[in-house]
Length: 154
Image (cartoon, rainbow, N blue to C red; front, top):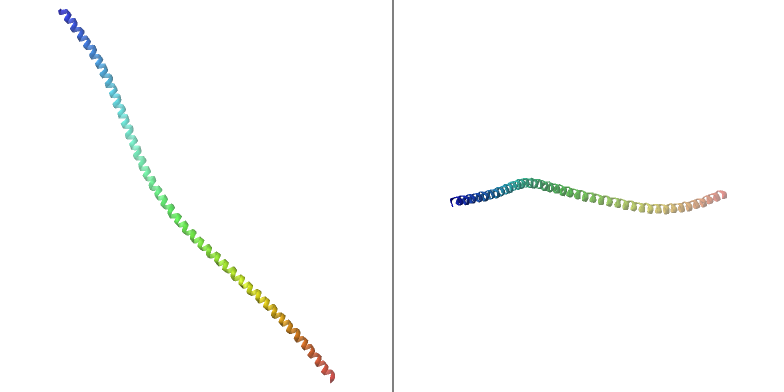
């Protein structure tokens, strides 16, 4: 019985060692998996930290871009206002020039009409003068005839 108990105890100890070895194997495997998980979590944390840094840099770049766009918009707005002002001034100058040209044409047209009327009046006067000259010549001819006749009677 002493041998049997020893064999039994030896078998129990052997089974316990096998069970302990199996448990140790499982613990080692679980420990390895935990180490892999921790490593992966560390990698993910590093990636997230890197991503956060990139996002912070991107945010800074976007803020700078927004500032540049705001400045550009302001410059464009100012330039457009100046352009519109220059265009209004140009339009005003053009209207003034067109009005001056119209007024000049009207003035020239009026002067032409006056000149035409003066020409017509001058022709009428000239015609009247010609008629007066013709009458005067006729009178002078008659007067000459009378003078010749009176000389002939003497």
